[in-house]
Amino acid sequence: MSNRVLILVPNDTLGGAEQHLKNLANYMLESGHSIDVFFLKKEITCAWRDLKGNINLYFTNSQKERSGAFSCLRKLIHNRNVKYEYVFTSHVHLNSLAGLLIRLGLIKTRFFVGRESTSIFKRYQGGKLLFFKALYKIGYSKLDLLICQTSYMKDQLVNGLSNLASKIDIQVIPNPINLKNISLTDIEQHFQYSDFIISAGRLIPEKGFDVLIGAFAVLKVKFPQLKLLILGEGDERNKLEYLVKELDLVEDVYLLGFKKNVYPYFLRAKACVVSSRIEGFPNVLLQMMSQNNTVISTLCAGGINEIPAIYTCMPNDVNGLVLEIEKSLMNDNSKNRIIFDAFLEKRSISGFVEQIDRFLNV
Image 1 (cartoon, rainbow, N blue to C red):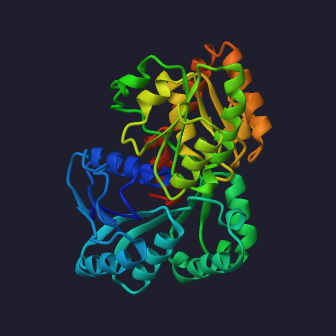
Image 2: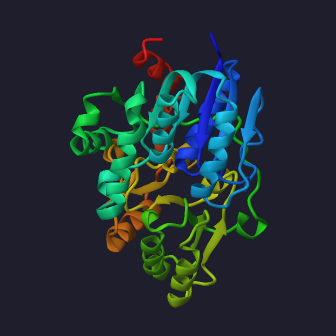
């Protein structure tokens, strides 16, 4: 039996879905599997280069996923005689592409496991939603297992695509987190002795960083020494920088760009904040909980209201976010460490893979 694993990824930046696939790749490598990882775009961050073992990384020369898909397709066709034990994907367009290639016999695998990275039927509408519905029809029928991160996500999918739900196995498996070999190196000297709150994610509207910056402007009145750090890169940078200037926060809000290692920032922060408007489930929330006792999140995804000891508010609510961050900074949250550790212990990557194999009857 083959022990090779194929993973398809849009790019090498470590957003939530990409980080999930990297953690899965690392676990499979440690378990003795050989890994082929195909990216739609050119290498940017080198964030996958630290994986050790029998792994091949295939990048295209494209800066855009759409054009890179053709280059990726050629490489996959070249590898069409390779038999994989598992194919893992975690984005609708790549779930669909992999399913189509399996149908055409251009990818050979024992098990095809896809994962939904967001609640498509909640996040999109109009022409974009129709486009995603078409993708579901193209390749999803070849899935042996489709993973939803929360029951809410599964319900949205089943209600939106009842015909698909009757054809494939859809299961809820909560996001895992890999806390092995975390490096807690020093952050920039400028921030080592500063009081700051922090958030992280791609600079896109869904992450709600504009709401967070607006809330921070209010918080500064009561906490004048406080800074706000935002880790991540994206198309909203110019808009957010303009908002920072407009609110006269240039000396207080720092957009630090992509950071390969977010953990030392989370550890040193006075509080960690997820300000998203909508998510599949924010993996960064689990990362924050692993390092910091003071965590605030909007109710941007199913299941967040079930997490113990975090502070929550509704999405897109500046006043609600101000209230929860202020409350968190005023309270003693030291007892949360035991609560968070117990919660995260149930989210191991090994347990995640065991659930996959159980649903696949391996």
